[in-house]
Length: 219
Image 1: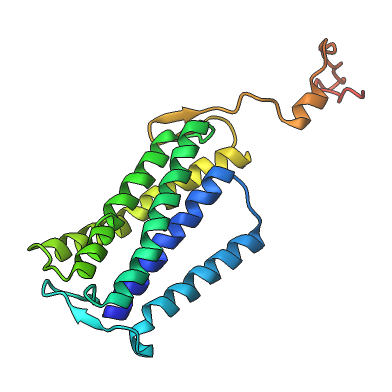
Image 2 (image 1 turned 180 degrees about the vertical axis):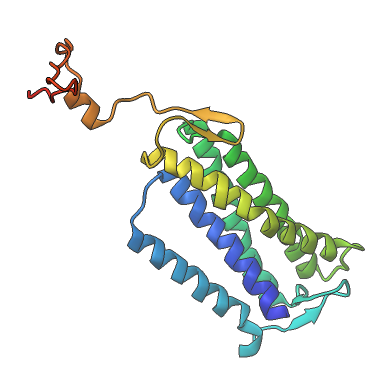
């Protein structure tokens, strides 16, 4: 259970970092996506296996589940080294995306930031509490577990529906106005095909055949 808990937490945190990166960049290659996904899974599995390799240990939190022992200096330092930069960089990327104002639905970005911070913000003070050798406040660990699992529950909506819909709008895969949540997004710029077809003056209506059908107008 300790391995699963840490693995799921690390994979969820670092994959959100990757999503924030491609949200700001708005484009990436399939190979980069496969490589990033593989790196996230392997690095998360390695990190959560540290107690099996003699680095620290898993410990029952006293509130329903097992996790890394935050009072182990090595694990607390490693958790802090990974968590704090990931929180800062992910939040920074989302803030830049909001300021750029190119993402079809700003609500997506706020939801991503809120769910990410609510799930992982307690990790940083937990590392300092562990390094100080202090006792955790009552219900601290169970609150972290609840918020972490709550993020997993809403992720299909945030990323599988809202974020994906915005990506389809940006890539032009959707036809016509696209409704993202309560916001209607319309691509006002003409496509290359429209630019070729539409000229300064429209041609006359095409002649009709004897049967009444339209005869294609040859340009």
